[in-house]
Length: 522
Image (cartoon, rainbow, N blue to C red; front, side):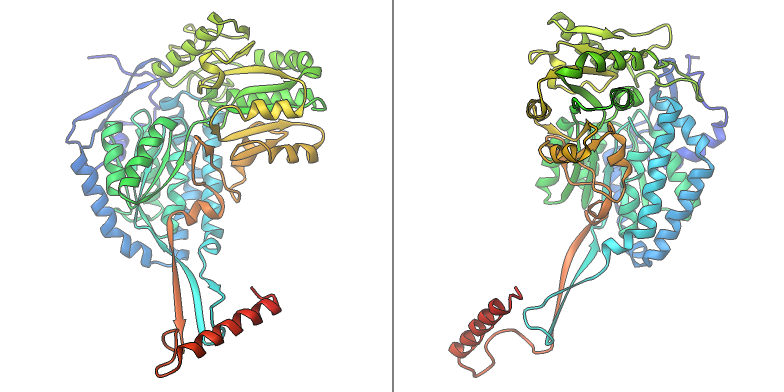
Protein backbone atom coordinates (compact mmCIF):
# COMPACT_ATOMS: atom_id res chain seq x y z
CA UNK A 1 0.00 0.00 0.00
CA UNK A 2 1.38 3.39 -0.94
CA UNK A 3 1.90 6.01 1.76
CA UNK A 4 -0.87 8.54 2.41
CA UNK A 5 -0.91 11.81 4.29
CA UNK A 6 -0.74 11.35 8.04
CA UNK A 7 -2.42 14.71 8.68
CA UNK A 8 -5.92 13.71 7.60
CA UNK A 9 -8.34 15.16 10.18
CA UNK A 10 -9.54 12.54 12.64
CA UNK A 11 -13.21 13.42 12.10
CA UNK A 12 -12.89 12.76 8.34
CA UNK A 13 -13.81 9.09 8.54
CA UNK A 14 -14.43 7.00 5.44
CA UNK A 15 -18.17 7.38 5.95
CA UNK A 16 -17.89 11.14 6.28
CA UNK A 17 -15.68 11.28 3.19
CA UNK A 18 -18.28 9.34 1.22
CA UNK A 19 -20.93 11.85 2.30
CA UNK A 20 -18.82 14.64 0.78
CA UNK A 21 -17.94 12.78 -2.40
CA UNK A 22 -21.60 12.17 -3.13
CA UNK A 23 -21.99 15.79 -4.16
CA UNK A 24 -19.88 15.08 -7.25
CA UNK A 25 -22.25 13.42 -9.71
CA UNK A 26 -19.64 11.99 -12.03
CA UNK A 27 -16.42 10.09 -12.24
CA UNK A 28 -16.13 9.07 -15.87
CA UNK A 29 -12.50 10.19 -15.83
CA UNK A 30 -11.62 8.09 -12.79
CA UNK A 31 -10.34 9.86 -9.69
CA UNK A 32 -7.78 12.51 -8.83
CA UNK A 33 -5.80 12.81 -5.63
CA UNK A 34 -4.18 16.00 -4.38
CA UNK A 35 -0.87 16.20 -2.55
CA UNK A 36 -1.10 17.34 1.07
CA UNK A 37 1.32 20.24 1.72
CA UNK A 38 2.35 19.15 5.22
CA UNK A 39 4.03 15.92 4.10
CA UNK A 40 3.89 15.87 0.26
CA UNK A 41 1.85 12.67 0.41
CA UNK A 42 -1.49 11.89 -1.24
CA UNK A 43 -4.62 13.10 0.52
CA UNK A 44 -7.79 11.32 -0.69
CA UNK A 45 -9.19 10.43 -4.10
CA UNK A 46 -12.08 12.47 -5.48
CA UNK A 47 -14.14 11.59 -8.60
CA UNK A 48 -12.98 13.24 -11.81
CA UNK A 49 -15.72 14.53 -14.11
CA UNK A 50 -15.70 14.68 -17.88
CA UNK A 51 -17.20 17.29 -20.20
CA UNK A 52 -20.50 15.41 -20.55
CA UNK A 53 -20.87 15.34 -16.78
CA UNK A 54 -20.30 19.08 -16.58
CA UNK A 55 -23.00 19.54 -19.23
CA UNK A 56 -25.35 17.30 -17.25
CA UNK A 57 -24.66 19.28 -14.07
CA UNK A 58 -25.45 22.52 -15.87
CA UNK A 59 -28.67 21.03 -17.22
CA UNK A 60 -29.76 19.96 -13.73
CA UNK A 61 -28.99 23.46 -12.46
CA UNK A 62 -30.92 25.01 -15.33
CA UNK A 63 -33.98 22.87 -14.62
CA UNK A 64 -33.84 23.86 -10.94
CA UNK A 65 -33.38 27.57 -11.59
CA UNK A 66 -36.99 28.49 -12.37
CA UNK A 67 -38.36 27.12 -9.11
CA UNK A 68 -35.48 28.61 -7.12
CA UNK A 69 -35.99 32.07 -8.67
CA UNK A 70 -39.73 31.84 -8.00
CA UNK A 71 -39.08 31.78 -4.26
CA UNK A 72 -39.15 35.09 -2.45
CA UNK A 73 -35.87 36.76 -1.60
CA UNK A 74 -36.73 36.20 2.06
CA UNK A 75 -37.00 32.44 1.50
CA UNK A 76 -33.65 32.25 -0.30
CA UNK A 77 -32.05 34.44 2.38
CA UNK A 78 -33.33 32.11 5.11
CA UNK A 79 -31.22 29.31 3.61
CA UNK A 80 -28.15 31.54 3.55
CA UNK A 81 -28.67 32.66 7.15
CA UNK A 82 -28.97 29.04 8.30
CA UNK A 83 -25.74 28.32 6.39
CA UNK A 84 -24.09 31.25 8.18
CA UNK A 85 -25.04 29.85 11.57
CA UNK A 86 -23.91 26.32 10.71
CA UNK A 87 -20.62 27.69 9.37
CA UNK A 88 -19.90 29.43 12.65
CA UNK A 89 -20.89 26.38 14.70
CA UNK A 90 -18.96 23.81 12.62
CA UNK A 91 -15.96 25.92 11.68
CA UNK A 92 -13.39 23.61 13.28
CA UNK A 93 -14.05 21.01 10.61
CA UNK A 94 -13.50 23.33 7.69
CA UNK A 95 -10.48 24.91 9.36
CA UNK A 96 -8.94 21.44 9.47
CA UNK A 97 -9.72 20.86 5.80
CA UNK A 98 -8.31 24.22 4.71
CA UNK A 99 -5.12 23.63 6.65
CA UNK A 100 -4.76 20.09 5.33
CA UNK A 101 -5.43 21.00 1.70
CA UNK A 102 -3.63 24.38 1.51
CA UNK A 103 -1.11 24.27 4.35
CA UNK A 104 -1.94 27.70 5.76
CA UNK A 105 -1.79 28.75 9.39
CA UNK A 106 -5.05 28.30 11.27
CA UNK A 107 -5.51 32.04 11.78
CA UNK A 108 -5.43 32.54 8.03
CA UNK A 109 -7.87 29.64 7.57
CA UNK A 110 -10.19 31.25 10.12
CA UNK A 111 -10.08 34.52 8.19
CA UNK A 112 -11.86 32.66 5.39
CA UNK A 113 -14.66 31.75 7.79
CA UNK A 114 -14.85 35.34 9.00
CA UNK A 115 -15.01 36.80 5.49
CA UNK A 116 -17.51 34.26 4.17
CA UNK A 117 -19.74 34.62 7.20
CA UNK A 118 -19.72 38.40 6.83
CA UNK A 119 -20.55 38.18 3.11
CA UNK A 120 -23.35 35.69 3.71
CA UNK A 121 -24.98 37.74 6.43
CA UNK A 122 -24.63 41.02 4.51
CA UNK A 123 -26.28 39.81 1.33
CA UNK A 124 -28.94 37.82 3.17
CA UNK A 125 -29.91 40.91 5.16
CA UNK A 126 -29.30 43.69 2.66
CA UNK A 127 -28.97 42.17 -0.81
CA UNK A 128 -32.61 42.71 -1.63
CA UNK A 129 -32.13 46.48 -1.51
CA UNK A 130 -29.50 46.19 -4.28
CA UNK A 131 -32.03 44.38 -6.49
CA UNK A 132 -35.20 46.35 -5.79
CA UNK A 133 -37.27 47.61 -8.70
CA UNK A 134 -36.21 51.18 -9.49
CA UNK A 135 -38.67 53.76 -10.87
CA UNK A 136 -37.22 55.77 -13.74
CA UNK A 137 -38.45 59.14 -15.00
CA UNK A 138 -40.54 58.45 -18.10
CA UNK A 139 -40.56 60.57 -21.27
CA UNK A 140 -44.20 61.58 -20.69
CA UNK A 141 -44.89 62.08 -16.97
CA UNK A 142 -48.16 60.79 -15.46
CA UNK A 143 -49.25 59.10 -18.66
CA UNK A 144 -46.29 56.73 -18.84
CA UNK A 145 -44.46 54.70 -16.20
CA UNK A 146 -40.98 53.15 -16.48
CA UNK A 147 -39.32 50.73 -14.06
CA UNK A 148 -35.89 49.10 -14.06
CA UNK A 149 -36.05 45.53 -12.78
CA UNK A 150 -33.34 42.95 -12.14
CA UNK A 151 -33.63 39.40 -13.49
CA UNK A 152 -31.30 36.47 -12.72
CA UNK A 153 -28.81 35.42 -15.38
CA UNK A 154 -29.73 31.75 -15.09
CA UNK A 155 -26.84 29.35 -14.44
CA UNK A 156 -23.67 30.93 -13.08
CA UNK A 157 -20.35 29.17 -13.60
CA UNK A 158 -17.85 29.67 -10.77
CA UNK A 159 -14.18 28.77 -11.16
CA UNK A 160 -12.31 29.35 -7.91
CA UNK A 161 -8.66 28.81 -6.89
CA UNK A 162 -6.92 26.77 -4.23
CA UNK A 163 -5.44 29.55 -2.11
CA UNK A 164 -8.71 30.60 -0.40
CA UNK A 165 -10.94 27.63 -1.21
CA UNK A 166 -13.77 28.44 1.19
CA UNK A 167 -14.02 32.21 0.82
CA UNK A 168 -13.33 32.44 -2.92
CA UNK A 169 -15.31 29.29 -3.60
CA UNK A 170 -18.49 30.34 -1.79
CA UNK A 171 -18.49 34.14 -1.34
CA UNK A 172 -19.31 34.61 -5.04
CA UNK A 173 -21.86 31.80 -4.93
CA UNK A 174 -23.92 33.39 -2.13
CA UNK A 175 -24.98 36.57 -4.01
CA UNK A 176 -25.49 34.55 -7.20
CA UNK A 177 -27.96 32.27 -5.41
CA UNK A 178 -29.70 35.12 -3.62
CA UNK A 179 -30.22 36.88 -6.96
CA UNK A 180 -32.21 33.84 -8.14
CA UNK A 181 -29.54 31.96 -10.07
CA UNK A 182 -28.37 28.40 -9.80
CA UNK A 183 -24.68 27.55 -10.11
CA UNK A 184 -22.06 25.07 -11.29
CA UNK A 185 -18.75 25.35 -9.43
CA UNK A 186 -15.44 23.88 -10.49
CA UNK A 187 -13.53 22.80 -7.40
CA UNK A 188 -9.79 23.31 -7.63
CA UNK A 189 -7.85 20.05 -7.87
CA UNK A 190 -5.80 20.95 -4.79
CA UNK A 191 -8.76 21.73 -2.52
CA UNK A 192 -11.93 19.82 -3.52
CA UNK A 193 -12.86 18.71 -0.01
CA UNK A 194 -13.26 22.24 1.34
CA UNK A 195 -15.78 23.10 -1.38
CA UNK A 196 -17.62 19.79 -0.99
CA UNK A 197 -17.85 20.41 2.76
CA UNK A 198 -19.47 23.78 2.03
CA UNK A 199 -21.87 22.08 -0.43
CA UNK A 200 -22.94 19.60 2.22
CA UNK A 201 -23.42 22.39 4.76
CA UNK A 202 -25.63 24.37 2.39
CA UNK A 203 -27.72 21.25 1.81
CA UNK A 204 -28.17 20.96 5.56
CA UNK A 205 -29.21 24.62 5.59
CA UNK A 206 -31.98 23.80 3.12
CA UNK A 207 -30.53 24.44 -0.32
CA UNK A 208 -32.32 22.21 -2.87
CA UNK A 209 -30.33 19.35 -4.37
CA UNK A 210 -29.73 20.71 -7.87
CA UNK A 211 -29.43 24.43 -7.18
CA UNK A 212 -25.66 24.19 -6.67
CA UNK A 213 -23.66 21.62 -8.61
CA UNK A 214 -19.98 20.93 -7.90
CA UNK A 215 -17.72 19.38 -10.54
CA UNK A 216 -14.17 18.14 -10.05
CA UNK A 217 -11.39 16.93 -12.29
CA UNK A 218 -8.82 18.21 -14.77
CA UNK A 219 -8.80 22.01 -14.49
CA UNK A 220 -8.34 23.10 -18.12
CA UNK A 221 -10.86 20.55 -19.40
CA UNK A 222 -13.73 20.96 -16.99
CA UNK A 223 -13.04 24.67 -16.47
CA UNK A 224 -13.57 25.23 -20.18
CA UNK A 225 -16.71 23.08 -20.03
CA UNK A 226 -18.11 25.21 -17.21
CA UNK A 227 -17.59 28.38 -19.28
CA UNK A 228 -19.27 26.71 -22.26
CA UNK A 229 -22.33 25.68 -20.22
CA UNK A 230 -22.95 28.77 -18.07
CA UNK A 231 -24.92 31.96 -18.67
CA UNK A 232 -22.37 34.01 -16.72
CA UNK A 233 -18.89 33.18 -15.45
CA UNK A 234 -17.14 34.20 -12.26
CA UNK A 235 -13.41 33.43 -12.28
CA UNK A 236 -10.64 34.01 -9.73
CA UNK A 237 -7.10 33.06 -10.66
CA UNK A 238 -4.09 34.03 -12.72
CA UNK A 239 -4.11 36.75 -15.36
CA UNK A 240 -3.03 34.27 -18.03
CA UNK A 241 -5.92 31.89 -17.35
CA UNK A 242 -8.29 34.82 -16.90
CA UNK A 243 -7.59 35.92 -20.47
CA UNK A 244 -8.54 32.45 -21.73
CA UNK A 245 -11.76 32.51 -19.70
CA UNK A 246 -12.63 35.98 -21.00
CA UNK A 247 -11.98 34.98 -24.62
CA UNK A 248 -14.09 31.84 -24.29
CA UNK A 249 -16.94 33.73 -22.62
CA UNK A 250 -16.77 36.47 -25.26
CA UNK A 251 -17.23 33.94 -28.05
CA UNK A 252 -20.53 32.98 -26.43
CA UNK A 253 -21.47 36.61 -25.71
CA UNK A 254 -21.88 35.93 -22.00
CA UNK A 255 -20.63 38.17 -19.22
CA UNK A 256 -17.72 37.42 -16.93
CA UNK A 257 -16.19 38.86 -13.78
CA UNK A 258 -12.50 38.17 -13.31
CA UNK A 259 -10.34 38.76 -10.26
CA UNK A 260 -6.78 38.13 -11.40
CA UNK A 261 -3.21 38.54 -10.22
CA UNK A 262 -1.50 41.50 -8.63
CA UNK A 263 1.95 42.89 -7.88
CA UNK A 264 0.66 44.97 -5.05
CA UNK A 265 2.59 47.97 -3.67
CA UNK A 266 2.69 49.48 -0.20
CA UNK A 267 3.98 53.03 0.33
CA UNK A 268 5.62 54.11 3.59
CA UNK A 269 5.56 57.92 3.74
CA UNK A 270 8.10 59.97 5.70
CA UNK A 271 5.54 60.71 8.44
CA UNK A 272 4.41 57.10 8.93
CA UNK A 273 4.34 55.33 12.27
CA UNK A 274 7.16 52.93 11.40
CA UNK A 275 6.28 50.27 13.95
CA UNK A 276 2.72 50.22 12.64
CA UNK A 277 3.96 50.17 9.04
CA UNK A 278 6.34 47.27 9.73
CA UNK A 279 3.61 45.23 11.40
CA UNK A 280 1.18 46.01 8.60
CA UNK A 281 3.73 45.02 5.98
CA UNK A 282 4.40 41.67 7.64
CA UNK A 283 0.67 40.93 7.91
CA UNK A 284 0.01 41.87 4.29
CA UNK A 285 3.10 40.26 2.78
CA UNK A 286 3.25 36.95 4.64
CA UNK A 287 -0.38 36.03 5.38
CA UNK A 288 -1.08 32.61 3.88
CA UNK A 289 2.65 32.53 3.08
CA UNK A 290 2.09 35.26 0.50
CA UNK A 291 -0.38 33.15 -1.48
CA UNK A 292 -3.20 35.64 -1.87
CA UNK A 293 -3.95 37.91 -4.77
CA UNK A 294 -4.07 41.09 -2.66
CA UNK A 295 -0.90 40.49 -0.65
CA UNK A 296 1.93 43.02 -0.73
CA UNK A 297 5.03 42.19 -2.81
CA UNK A 298 6.57 45.68 -3.19
CA UNK A 299 7.28 48.10 -0.32
CA UNK A 300 8.11 51.65 -1.42
CA UNK A 301 9.79 53.62 1.37
CA UNK A 302 10.66 57.31 1.66
CA UNK A 303 14.43 57.69 1.73
CA UNK A 304 14.42 59.59 5.02
CA UNK A 305 12.89 56.68 6.95
CA UNK A 306 14.17 53.78 4.85
CA UNK A 307 16.84 52.56 7.27
CA UNK A 308 14.67 52.91 10.37
CA UNK A 309 11.73 51.19 8.68
CA UNK A 310 13.91 48.37 7.35
CA UNK A 311 15.25 47.71 10.82
CA UNK A 312 11.73 47.40 12.20
CA UNK A 313 10.56 45.29 9.27
CA UNK A 314 13.40 42.81 9.71
CA UNK A 315 12.70 42.55 13.43
CA UNK A 316 9.02 41.88 12.75
CA UNK A 317 9.89 39.35 10.03
CA UNK A 318 12.28 37.47 12.31
CA UNK A 319 9.46 37.10 14.81
CA UNK A 320 7.28 35.16 12.36
CA UNK A 321 6.96 31.52 13.41
CA UNK A 322 7.11 29.15 10.45
CA UNK A 323 5.43 25.83 11.12
CA UNK A 324 2.82 23.32 10.00
CA UNK A 325 0.15 20.99 11.28
CA UNK A 326 -3.50 21.27 12.28
CA UNK A 327 -4.22 23.81 14.98
CA UNK A 328 -2.79 27.14 16.08
CA UNK A 329 0.78 27.67 17.25
CA UNK A 330 2.55 29.21 14.25
CA UNK A 331 2.21 32.34 12.12
CA UNK A 332 2.66 31.05 8.59
CA UNK A 333 2.59 27.62 7.07
CA UNK A 334 4.25 26.00 4.08
CA UNK A 335 3.54 26.79 0.47
CA UNK A 336 0.72 24.78 -1.07
CA UNK A 337 2.87 22.53 -3.21
CA UNK A 338 5.95 21.88 -5.27
CA UNK A 339 4.98 24.25 -8.10
CA UNK A 340 4.65 27.17 -5.68
CA UNK A 341 7.93 26.39 -3.95
CA UNK A 342 9.73 26.09 -7.29
CA UNK A 343 8.38 29.47 -8.40
CA UNK A 344 9.41 31.23 -5.19
CA UNK A 345 12.88 29.69 -5.24
CA UNK A 346 13.34 30.60 -8.91
CA UNK A 347 12.34 34.24 -8.32
CA UNK A 348 14.67 34.66 -5.37
CA UNK A 349 17.53 32.83 -7.09
CA UNK A 350 17.16 35.00 -10.21
CA UNK A 351 17.08 38.20 -8.15
CA UNK A 352 20.18 37.28 -6.15
CA UNK A 353 22.05 36.26 -9.29
CA UNK A 354 21.32 39.69 -10.77
CA UNK A 355 22.43 41.65 -7.73
CA UNK A 356 19.62 41.72 -5.18
CA UNK A 357 20.47 41.40 -1.49
CA UNK A 358 18.65 39.01 0.85
CA UNK A 359 17.99 40.88 4.10
CA UNK A 360 15.91 38.12 5.70
CA UNK A 361 14.97 34.55 4.85
CA UNK A 362 15.68 33.53 1.29
CA UNK A 363 15.68 29.76 1.61
CA UNK A 364 13.48 26.71 1.95
CA UNK A 365 13.12 24.93 5.30
CA UNK A 366 12.81 21.21 4.55
CA UNK A 367 13.47 20.55 8.23
CA UNK A 368 10.03 22.03 8.93
CA UNK A 369 8.18 20.62 5.94
CA UNK A 370 8.67 19.72 2.28
CA UNK A 371 7.26 23.02 1.01
CA UNK A 372 8.17 25.37 3.87
CA UNK A 373 9.91 28.61 2.88
CA UNK A 374 11.16 31.39 5.10
CA UNK A 375 9.52 34.84 5.02
CA UNK A 376 11.91 36.80 2.83
CA UNK A 377 12.89 40.47 2.45
CA UNK A 378 14.96 41.61 -0.53
CA UNK A 379 16.67 44.91 -1.34
CA UNK A 380 18.25 46.16 -4.55
CA UNK A 381 15.60 44.68 -6.85
CA UNK A 382 15.92 46.03 -10.40
CA UNK A 383 13.91 45.89 -13.61
CA UNK A 384 15.66 42.92 -15.16
CA UNK A 385 14.77 40.63 -12.26
CA UNK A 386 11.79 38.32 -12.72
CA UNK A 387 10.24 39.29 -9.38
CA UNK A 388 10.47 43.03 -10.01
CA UNK A 389 7.04 43.16 -11.67
CA UNK A 390 6.27 39.44 -11.99
CA UNK A 391 3.91 38.05 -9.35
CA UNK A 392 5.81 35.74 -7.01
CA UNK A 393 2.81 34.53 -4.97
CA UNK A 394 4.93 33.60 -2.01
CA UNK A 395 6.37 35.03 1.23
CA UNK A 396 8.74 37.42 -0.54
CA UNK A 397 8.72 41.21 -0.40
CA UNK A 398 11.07 43.67 -2.15
CA UNK A 399 12.07 47.07 -0.73
CA UNK A 400 12.31 50.16 -2.96
CA UNK A 401 13.74 53.54 -1.88
CA UNK A 402 12.14 56.78 -3.18
CA UNK A 403 12.60 60.51 -2.60
CA UNK A 404 8.98 61.55 -2.16
CA UNK A 405 5.29 61.01 -2.85
CA UNK A 406 5.43 61.67 -6.59
CA UNK A 407 8.13 59.07 -7.13
CA UNK A 408 6.36 56.64 -4.80
CA UNK A 409 3.18 56.85 -6.87
CA UNK A 410 5.16 56.44 -10.08
CA UNK A 411 6.83 53.28 -8.76
CA UNK A 412 3.53 51.95 -7.40
CA UNK A 413 1.89 52.35 -10.82
CA UNK A 414 4.57 50.45 -12.70
CA UNK A 415 3.42 47.34 -14.51
CA UNK A 416 -0.02 46.48 -15.89
CA UNK A 417 -1.62 45.01 -12.78
CA UNK A 418 -3.66 46.99 -10.28
CA UNK A 419 -5.49 44.98 -7.66
CA UNK A 420 -4.65 46.32 -4.19
CA UNK A 421 -2.30 48.80 -2.56
CA UNK A 422 -1.48 50.31 0.82
CA UNK A 423 -0.22 53.62 2.20
CA UNK A 424 1.09 54.22 5.73
CA UNK A 425 1.00 57.83 6.84
CA UNK A 426 0.11 59.98 9.85
CA UNK A 427 -1.62 62.37 7.44
CA UNK A 428 -4.61 60.32 6.38
CA UNK A 429 -6.12 63.17 4.33
CA UNK A 430 -3.02 63.39 2.13
CA UNK A 431 -2.77 59.60 1.94
CA UNK A 432 -6.40 59.33 0.82
CA UNK A 433 -5.73 61.95 -1.86
CA UNK A 434 -2.68 59.96 -3.01
CA UNK A 435 -4.84 56.84 -3.24
CA UNK A 436 -6.81 58.37 -6.12
CA UNK A 437 -3.59 58.56 -8.14
CA UNK A 438 -2.71 54.89 -7.66
CA UNK A 439 -3.97 52.54 -10.37
CA UNK A 440 -5.52 49.96 -8.10
CA UNK A 441 -8.95 48.55 -7.39
CA UNK A 442 -8.50 49.17 -3.66
CA UNK A 443 -6.12 51.27 -1.57
CA UNK A 444 -5.80 50.76 2.18
CA UNK A 445 -4.52 53.60 4.36
CA UNK A 446 -2.63 52.48 7.48
CA UNK A 447 -3.46 48.89 6.62
CA UNK A 448 -1.68 46.57 4.23
CA UNK A 449 -4.45 44.59 2.57
CA UNK A 450 -7.31 43.48 4.80
CA UNK A 451 -9.40 46.59 5.44
CA UNK A 452 -10.81 47.03 1.94
CA UNK A 453 -11.70 43.39 1.38
CA UNK A 454 -13.26 43.15 4.84
CA UNK A 455 -15.59 46.03 3.96
CA UNK A 456 -18.19 43.89 2.21
CA UNK A 457 -20.46 46.84 1.37
CA UNK A 458 -17.71 48.29 -0.86
CA UNK A 459 -16.73 46.82 -4.26
CA UNK A 460 -13.52 44.81 -4.55
CA UNK A 461 -11.73 44.03 -7.81
CA UNK A 462 -8.87 44.89 -10.11
CA UNK A 463 -7.84 47.39 -12.73
CA UNK A 464 -5.71 46.75 -15.79
CA UNK A 465 -4.45 43.17 -15.95
CA UNK A 466 -5.88 42.46 -12.51
CA UNK A 467 -9.35 41.83 -13.81
CA UNK A 468 -12.86 42.94 -14.68
CA UNK A 469 -15.90 43.44 -12.48
CA UNK A 470 -16.23 43.56 -8.71
CA UNK A 471 -17.24 41.32 -5.85
CA UNK A 472 -18.91 42.72 -2.69
CA UNK A 473 -21.25 45.68 -2.46
CA UNK A 474 -24.02 46.43 -4.93
CA UNK A 475 -22.03 45.34 -7.96
CA UNK A 476 -21.17 42.09 -6.25
CA UNK A 477 -24.79 40.91 -6.56
CA UNK A 478 -26.03 42.96 -9.51
CA UNK A 479 -23.41 41.36 -11.79
CA UNK A 480 -25.44 38.15 -11.53
CA UNK A 481 -28.53 39.85 -12.98
CA UNK A 482 -29.65 41.45 -16.22
CA UNK A 483 -31.33 44.86 -16.11
CA UNK A 484 -34.73 44.94 -17.79
CA UNK A 485 -36.67 48.10 -18.54
CA UNK A 486 -40.45 47.80 -18.22
CA UNK A 487 -42.18 50.80 -19.86
CA UNK A 488 -45.98 51.20 -19.51
CA UNK A 489 -48.06 53.72 -21.45
CA UNK A 490 -51.66 54.77 -20.80
CA UNK A 491 -51.67 56.57 -24.17
CA UNK A 492 -50.73 53.72 -26.42
CA UNK A 493 -47.76 54.00 -28.81
CA UNK A 494 -45.67 57.15 -28.64
CA UNK A 495 -45.75 59.11 -31.89
CA UNK A 496 -48.04 61.27 -33.98
CA UNK A 497 -51.73 60.47 -33.27
CA UNK A 498 -53.64 58.79 -36.08
CA UNK A 499 -54.73 61.39 -38.60
CA UNK A 500 -52.64 64.10 -36.97
CA UNK A 501 -50.04 66.25 -38.70
CA UNK A 502 -46.46 65.09 -38.20
CA UNK A 503 -45.28 68.70 -38.15
CA UNK A 504 -47.53 69.48 -35.19
CA UNK A 505 -46.22 66.50 -33.27
CA UNK A 506 -42.62 67.57 -33.91
CA UNK A 507 -43.41 71.14 -32.84
CA UNK A 508 -44.95 69.81 -29.59
CA UNK A 509 -41.83 67.77 -28.90
CA UNK A 510 -39.59 70.80 -29.47
CA UNK A 511 -41.66 72.88 -27.07
CA UNK A 512 -41.27 70.17 -24.46
CA UNK A 513 -37.48 70.19 -24.89
CA UNK A 514 -37.33 73.98 -24.49
CA UNK A 515 -39.59 73.89 -21.44
CA UNK A 516 -37.49 71.21 -19.74
CA UNK A 517 -34.36 73.22 -20.45
CA UNK A 518 -35.85 76.37 -18.91
CA UNK A 519 -37.06 74.43 -15.87
CA UNK A 520 -33.69 72.65 -15.65
CA UNK A 521 -35.47 69.37 -15.20
CA UNK A 522 -33.15 67.45 -17.52
